[in-house]
Length: 212
Length: 212
DNA sequence: GTTTTCTAATACAGATCCGTATCCGAATAC
DNA sequence: GTATTCGGATACGGATCTGTATTAGAAAAC
Image: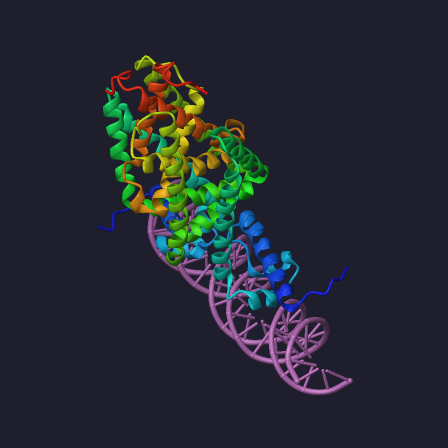
């Protein structure tokens, strides 16, 4: 052991550890509730190391936000890339969600913390907004494709349908953490699947409903 | 002016002002980011007054959580109580949402703050869980009734459909704050209305969709 | 009008946190 | 090998927060 590390590697590792420790502590006590000292200590370093690697807590939060959103987008892309059929894609998403459900509390807490931080930090908002927009865009395309495949007209602007599906992700996560018994592991995927089916029905079966 | 206040009234008023000031500050800087001193100062009192009225910040948060959830439930009940038809009910909800949209950022920030606090404070969780459960229950009944009226079978457990509608509330709120341009004022009500229509279609028009 | 009770202000001690400035040791350059 | 550079630890001043203990002034009791 005691492998020799080049300076770059060492610095990289330190930054990574600080980021990971910060993520944990943010989930546990919130961004404001976690001090620089606690972060450094959990990562196994001193406050000096922290300030050597980040301009301050805000800078670290920004980088964490970047890293997480990027990674999440990648994971979803990878998960669905290999799927040939719609069912396969859903299965892949299901698996991904099940995986994430393992430590859901901290996941949600961290996401909400970063979100709140972004809401309050104007210069961070575009970053999040952009990522959310991209997610909605991808979803919209998927919805459009699925409706097409079912031979149904879109019952509303696909962008709006995608927004609904996307919003469900956060909303169901929240409900699940508040009341784990009422929301199953796969609620998100199940819900989106149901929505797709019902939109297909609505778009493909005009005249059945009075339409009010 | 300078109306004479009885002691009870005075104390009541003080508590109310402290609660209101705390709500504002929590939305702005988070529960952890708002100090007792700041709360007292914004309310126009000193820290002594605060500790005279609350055991500490946690106690205030608990009471705020209680007050808010109770009030919100009441508002929705009142708004929909006078509605005779489904359209009227939706209109009432739309109006309520539009009203709330005026200062959406602080509303969402406060809700998320309280939510996060509840997630991290085990003794507060049942309180929130109970209220959310009640909301879902009421929604489930509404969904069931609407599907019945449309002569459609429920395409899934009404509790699950209600969960979806309920989750959308938070999820869309989040998206709206992140990207105000992409989510209209009445997105929540519009979305729920669309879902009801499509579920009715799905439940009432079997055979139209292959069901995969 | 006097006494008692209670609300809210002020004062104080302890703890924590932040950011910087300085110093040590290991990795690089020579 | 020696000199230099850089990552990280330690030390410090200043600010802020918390909770309690004490105190002034208004409402209630008599």
